[in-house]
Image (cartoon, rainbow, N blue to C red):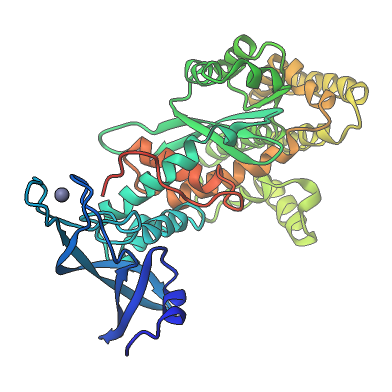
Length: 431
Ligand SMILES: [Zn+2]
């Protein structure tokens, strides 16, 4: 089929090119194109050049109407006719299709968007475009780095959330590797990730931000890790430090888990088995009491009646529920005495795990109660962190390279794709 001028070229939609012809090859579309540059001047002497030759080059482009597309760019080879000029011939170039590239720049930008915004794997996108994994990853790097490095991305953070998260699970050659993640609590936007889970890593990141940025951060929400608290006190001294409600609640349920495992072992002499009454209610024990159905209540009570000799699990379960309900208090005036009673109650119990939990909570008392001074700021954070962890598990599978991991995480959770079109880095583009 021959292209019919402007309509066909409009369908092509590639600036500086016109469509010459379309053909079908085994269900894939081949589109012959040429540039609109019908005249050229010698870069050496400025004289009008003469068309010397035509040389086709094949590149992958965006799919059209659900079919793979290959462009055949019929390149012009120009010749300078000026005898005194040292330039002889040259081949035309275009920013839309870089020299020696296997695909168009708009295809590379789309590959970046699919990996970043859609969270598709690099392997999947590479297969769809018919290029290799490293070629696709290079496109993600070239187009993604500019988005991630955009300083506007970090603007206007009033509440900073800090959390540790696993980057790489342990295997035979290394321990579980952790990263520290910084989140804008208000928007659930991932700001950055840095290797390690240390106060030092956090301090270095915060101190690398402009003074004005640091002044704007009024609240810092964190998980109960002393290193982060110390780092935030030093690097953001004016910000109110708040313990994240999600993590506090989790500490309470972790204590229930510990008690259940110990009681189970003491009474049965082995670790949890499928038919053990306590093992069977392990998940129900981790849920909020107000989320239990009638049936779940029945299972819970039956499991405790059968396995919780001495009532230690029940005691820790009530303590975990009460700790969780502390966040329902209207204000600090209500929360403070309630927290005090909770601490006394735990300390007076005969459950060692509750003693330990009470000591931990007591050591975080100012940061926990600060929740009530900040309008419950860390509520939104739970979602941000959960979202982040899900994304990490889904797209972070099998990562070895921290820089790729950071780039993909930020492209997925830290870039507002509605405000950004992928544009290439200025300067050196790799293939
Ligand atoms: Zn010349």
